[in-house]
Image (tube, rainbow, N blue to C red; front, side, top):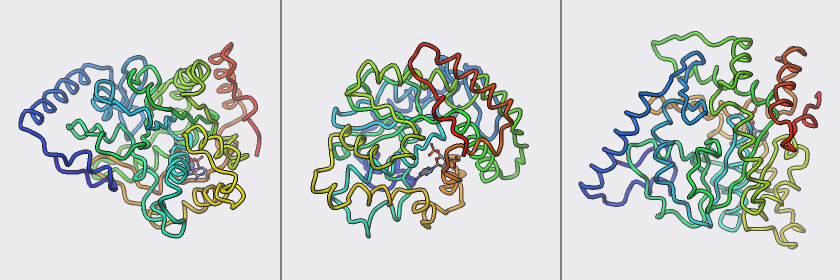
Length: 352
Ligand code: A3P
C-alpha cells in the first residue's frame, strides 16, 4: 500500500518499507478474515453518520472493527512508547497536543512548532486509523518513544499494550454526551453527499447514550476499565479528568510529563516552559490556527473536518442543552454504575 496521505511524517514511514508479495498476501488474508468476522456482528445504524457494531461487549464504530482486531493481534508497542486513551469527546485533541509538545519540547521552538501547521491528530495518530489500511503498519520504524492514541476500551486492548505507559482521560458524562451529539451532527453534515440522512434529535440521542449505545459505549464500562487498571498499576496507567485539567493545567501537565518519563527540570519550570506549552495547546490558541479551522471532511476515510474537534472547550456546557431531569437521570445512572469503585463524577458536576 502507498503511504496514507492523512499522516504527517513520520507516520507515513510505517507503510513505506518494501514488502514481499508474501507479506502483501498475508495482510490481505488477515484483513479479509477480520471483515468476515465483522460482518457477523450485530449492527446499529440509528445514530448517523457512523454505524456501530457490538464487539466484545462494547459498541464500536463499525468501520474501525477490522482495525481493532488488527490492533489486538499486531500492536506491539515498545516499553518507551506512550498510549493515550480517551472516551470520544473527552479532550483527546487537547491531550494529544499537550503530550506531543511536552515529549518533543527540546526538538522544536514554539515559534516554528509542528502544532502550528499540523492538527494534533496528525502529530499523534489514532491506532484505529493506522491499522485501517489493510496493511499491518511497521511501527518499529518510528522514533522511540512514539505517542499513539486510541479510543479502545480496556478489555479490548491487547496484553502487549500493557508493556507501554497508558494515559487515560475522561470527562463528565453529561458534557461528553453534549459534545458527542454536536460532533456527530457536524460530522454527518460534512460527510453527507447525495445521501441526506436525517440527524438524530438530542432527546433520542440522550436515550441511546444512557443505554450505553454510543461510540465505544457503554460509557461507564469503558471508564471503569481504565480506572481499575490505574489503581492496580499506577506507574503504568495515569488516569486524568478533563475538568481537573481545565482547573489547573500547569499542575496536570507536570504530572503528565513525569509520568511520560520526561519531567520538567527546575530550570524549565523557572523559565516558564510549562506555561508556554499550556498556552500553545490552549483551546483558544489551537482553535484559531488555520490548520484547525479547516472545515473539510475527508470523504475517502470518513474523517470529520479538523474544525469539528474544537467547539466550546468549556466545563459544564451541558446546562445549555440538558433539562434538569435529563441531568439527574444521567447522574443517577453514573452513580449506580460506578458504585463501590471509588470513582465518581459528582465533584465535576459544577454549574458554570
Ligand atoms: P466541546 O464539544 O464540549 O467543546 P475530543 O478531542 O476527545 O474529540 O474532545 C473534543 C472536546 O474537547 C470538545 O469539547 C472540544 O471543544 C474540546 N477541546 C478541544 N481542544 C481543546 C483544548 N485545547 N482545550 C480544552 N478543550 C479542548
